[in-house]
Length: 81
Image (tube, rainbow, N blue to C red; front, top):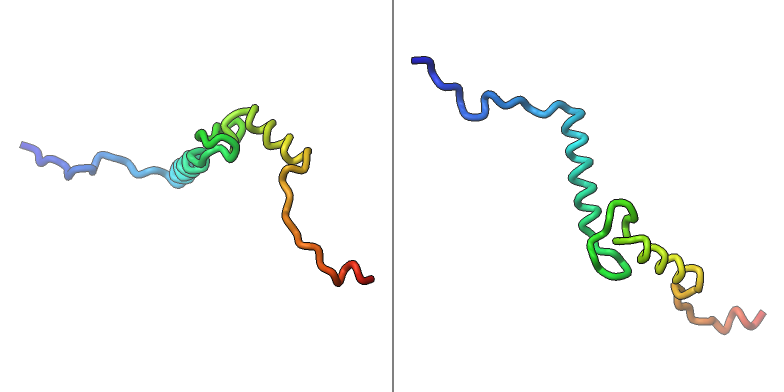
């Protein structure tokens, strides 16, 4: 009787290009697992980081209407000049 090969001996290892592609796929899955910043649903690949074109448009409208602002305190020294 011929001896059995060890477990996993018949499997070929992934070539470097395949390993890189697999790592890129895994990274894409992780990126798409982040929630949409507008509604919290999982992000869609086509409109990342948003879940849909609607959420993308909502965000654009917020930028264009100055809803996103950085609060700043007015210094008295600037007014003295």
